[in-house]
Length: 422
Ligand code: PA5
Image (cartoon, rainbow, N blue to C red; front, side, top):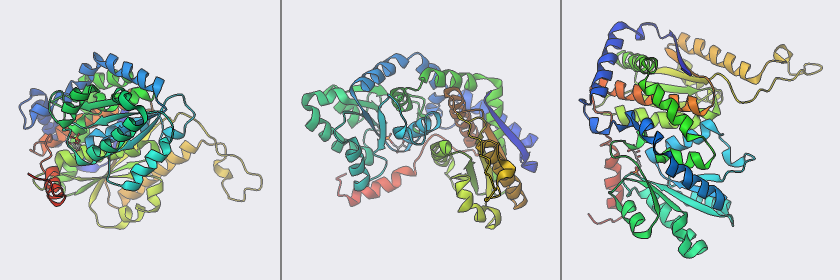
């Protein structure tokens, strides 16, 4: 197990009643008898994908051989997990790394002309391919963006453009699937029984990951083992039980305080996972992710002394890939020689420990989730852990964690205002 939870700062939140409820919710989840159970295919997704990696790996080899850049178009569940994966296992500045794999640009996750123009400019004259990801095949942001990049590909490659378009979508439904079949684009399936925010371990996340040289089988194997292990399930129940108690205690927010920039998009993915799954029927903790130590210098004041709204989940990675020791300075002008020779990550850990104590004293109960390292295996466990905890937690709140009726409401207004006919 590459994940642990430190729970000595939450007092009464970890109790037998909450754990019993978590047990019951887990049974509902795996029995397939809960609301929305037709969308629990993510429970077996790592195992299923393990027998289906060849096609993804072949496409990744092709993209690596003929493209300097891959443009990944998608939004929400068709974007955040993929970015979290690349960010966690590779780097927040993946494109700037010295590497032999293509640059990867994420786009289609907003409606900004400048953002699109910047990506086009960054690609420049370099060869590129496009991976458009949309389960419904009709989402406005990726659809508009795909129109633009489809045109660019056609202008540059003519008839060969179709060999540079990779579509990740529903197996049979949707406009994108129809187009892909008509035009002969290579397609990858987002399974029917897996919703967007649970789809990162399908081709949604795995194709861009394989293009970046990430060993996708290592992610899948470890996610699969975690989902099926008693220890993994117990850890997810524990987290769900603690969240439930915080909710019961009247907390209205959970802050995900990540102590490493490589966790930034994991935090964004986590926000969507819990926010879209639980924000229903006027229930659910509002999930907000922050990046420490930087946000301690902007949001720290409110957390310490502002309105008492929240419970906090610190997230930390025990071993970074590199070590940098703090240099000794002759004369000690900045008065830092007392930590000379220590690794920077030691200072980070002490900042975390100091923050935990301060926030607890300020009335913010907190837990610490520690991930061992930035490996494929640990990422696989992290995804399995949060997904399991989310399914359990949603059922503890007695709601359907697998739909998102609220997301449709703004879309109806937007399309009406844009003049779309019914
Ligand atoms: O979780 C969800 O269902 C949403 O966030 C979707 O993933 C998002 O709206 C994108 O939808 P689609 O993949 O259909 O383009």
